[in-house]
Each structure stands twice: as C-alpha cells, then as structure tokens.
Picture 1: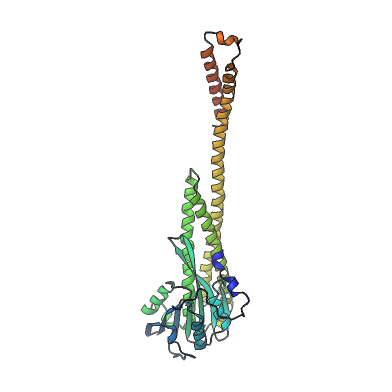
Picture 2 (picture 1 turned 30 degrees about the vertical axis):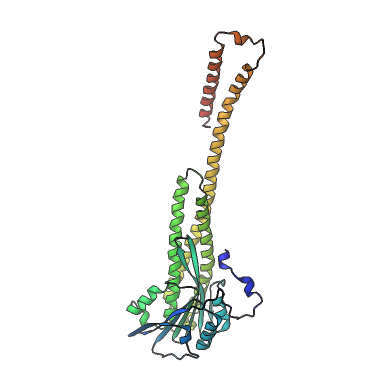
Length: 355
C-alpha cells in the first residue's frame, strides 16, 4: 500500500493550496489540440508558451495536455493562464490524493489515477491524472508520460464517431472513459493471471516460494484497484445525478454506460481478489496435506521397525545362557518372524489406507 502514500512528512504542516511538486523536474511535455466538426490541429506546446488570461475562440474546443509536473513555476503559470484554483492544483500535485470530482461553478475538476500493467516487473503502475473542463477548453495533467489518450486523439484526428461534433463536455467524458477502459483491461489481464495460478495450484506437487508471492501480489493489486475505482464510481454517480446542471450537452446515456463499466470493474476486482485469497488458503492447505502425508509415511515405517528393533535388540544381548542361540534354525526363524511381522503390519496399514 505504500506505493499510494509517499512524501507525507515533507508536506506536513504546509498551508492548504500550497503548490508542492514531489520529485521536481524541469521537463514538461505537452500538446495543444484545437478542433471542431470541420477542423483539427495538433501541436507540441511548452509551459512557456502559455500567456496569462488566455482567450479562446468559441468556434473550437481547445485541449491542453501536459505530461510531467515540472516545478512550482509551471503550475503558477497555468494558474494565471486559466484562472485555476490553488486547492485543486495542489490536489493534482499531491500524487497520494484519492480520486474525486468537484463542481467549481466555472469549471469542473476530476482527479483520478491511470493504471498500466508492467509485464516485466509484474506490477500495476499508477499515473496521477487531473482534468479541468471550462468554457470551450479542457486541461489534462499527467504525472508521467502516458498513452491512455491515444485512441481519443485518433478519434479526433480522423473524426470517428460524434466526438468532433460535440463540445468540451463530451471530450471531458471521453477522457475519463479512456482511463476507465484502461482499468478494465488491467483487471482482465490480472484476472487471467489468477486463473493461470489456479491451474498451477491444482496441479502443484511441491512447495514453490514464488507461487505464494505471485498469489499474494495479485491479491494486493486487486485491493489497490478497488480502493481507486470506488471513489471514481461515486464521482460518476454524482455526475449522473446532476448532469443537467453540470453539462451543456446530454451525457446521460454515456455516463450510465460508463457507470456500467465501473460496476463491471468493481465486481471483477472483488471476485478476483476473493479468488486470490482462496488460492492462498488452498495452496497452504495442499502444502499441509502433503506434509501430513510425508509424516504419515515416516510414522508408518517407523512403527513397522519398532518390533523389528525389539527383536534384534533382544537377541543382540550377549548373555551366556540364551537357549535360542543354540538352535540350528534360529537365525532363519528370526528372519521369518521379522518378515511376517513386517508384511502383516503393511497389510494392516494398507487396509486402514494409511499408505
């Protein structure tokens, strides 16, 4: 869980709204897209290109996207250019903050995390993401470079669907939908891993330390995904209940579809988390059963050797007067007795299904 809570002591005691960049970097990359039904342009943009109190043409939708948080000066520049509130900008910079939605009267604000499954490290990576929508413009801020909006850009560029004909509210919805789709893809991939581990556990013949680690890692990942998706579900519910006052276009059907996707993610993550927990219990039980089988095997054969040890110990004593020692067939008789005892005990244990 520590991956979602970092640098808390450094921010402790600061005034609300203080812009504090964690792991400050001077590099901020971004692009600016301007479009309407018949026009589309996309160009790279730097933080220094922004001017205070930017005025936009009402004939276009304007989308500014930035990757990397740079330094506090960058956000101060953004703040003056778009008249953004300090508290929400501070929430974007606070990469520990949980997802949320806020109506700021002149703007709407959505805070969430994008997810990406790192196949090499076998971990889910989280990318802090903030969105503002205002009159004719949308702003997006990502903690690190991401391709989560690649399909949205392609739809805008090639005029797929209705996105070019809609206003900034529809773009705002489309960006959130793209992030939610990423959650669905990650949960599906992790779910496939759980099902593969289920087969391994069912066929496992010996203890493997990595198998336990993999199951525990998956259970932890699903728990973290649940913690992130539940606030997003609540935010979408608020947007649906107040969509008439929040948006200029009718997004009711789209938001309900988005809510269904989130419900699917929530239910799948919960089910797979339970499966992972059950796998841990089943795996531990299987290991205990195999250990018990080994102990039973050792106990049975130790029990067989108890009377044999007694006989050999008895006749191994060097007493002078032991009549059996003078018998001609004493040695083979002792062997016959010991073999008979061993076979008899083996048959007994076999009938009792102990071996």
